[in-house]
Image 1: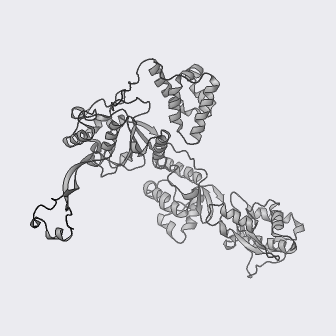
Image 2: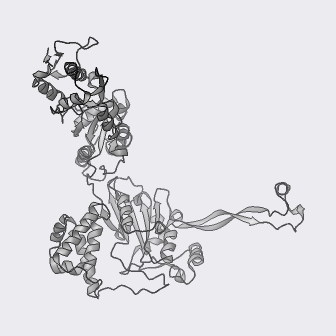
Image 3: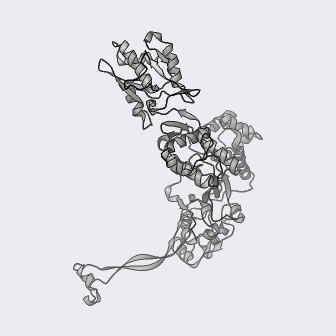
Length: 570
């Protein structure tokens, strides 16, 4: 039996179709593994014709790496089995809800990995790619107090409205309070407590699967945080599926569950036939598991064997995220890698590593508060509580207590930790460096004079930020006939490493509007020109690891003697 009519006739058409899949994967419309499985299944004939025995090459020709060739093989093998008649699609019988199309995806799968690797997001995107309607998705989260009744259902007291007789009974049979609050001929309503079977997530998904031919998905978050043996109970037997995706072993339903299902589905439904429960082929159960969770209840091997497992690795994909500490911006992925390397060296395990989405910062900026209260709090309590990890140390190798980071020197200590961890510094502090300590060379404080002035207007030694601003003022005085734009152009043409060293009003407004930095507005100091215009001089003038802004400034000023600016060390 040929499962699908092949629509691809040439090798180039096959490559182009694979490239289209790569485009969909790049735009996050489908996962790479799901595409490979689907593509191998639907185009098995073309793939085996042009790439038999070398599926990796097709992936490479299509733009992928070769890492998912096993999924191609899985899809192609499914295609071959259908072609060779090893299994077939069941015929579609209208109005017979128990007949469902056999699929190639796993019906019970656990996505596991370190916290923040995107396991839940992976499931969400997979269901989105399949256009699964909300009514066919059922979610629950396991926790230590979860049990069979919270997962499946149980009898509970419920409130029911009961109508009293409409007035033909004598008034003495009513309470005085009832009569006082009613109008003539009004029906009095009692709220009566009664006991009903209240279905929970599993039964709701089970019922929906028998009411539709569409696939239904039961999502269990944090599956290892609950006692799975206690939660599933006898349902454990239903997880064994046959080649058609139906439970291989049906189980007898409890009387309360049976009564409920017979009432909802009907006594003749396959979902409760002969009083037995049986998972249909269109009910998929997906779960997530954080390998770092200190689970109260281990998952036994028999339960594990009934699931397919897929590891969600850390991909270090958020390269544009930054950690902002006192105006200094550090690379999130650099921090992530450095910390994870230390975690692995200490624990010889990946379980407690930081995943890509361990934090979800607004606009890609991880604030100092978010870093402390989410990331470092986790590391201190779950990773380094026994002194492991070599993370909470300053650059001079002194130990740091978590409480130290909340003290008056907390920010300075946090910056020192970043140096100890060798986290990549992306940009210098946006704080006005006029408030910083003087630059030192070989332990000797460096002092400057500009055009013979060795003190600023307050009679203090020049700080770097004030010195740069004074240099621009001198230029403006020497070129008083120039407009703000002309002065800006002259300075920007030199190629100073200091960012936005001189800006007009419009430049500053445009920079602020296009920035995610909450401190963008104070990254410059204003100079008023004689013609009434304003210029703005950058305060980001320090020498950092990535940009030697001040040293470059001194060198370039010295290369422009015609500007009339003379800066010397004193």
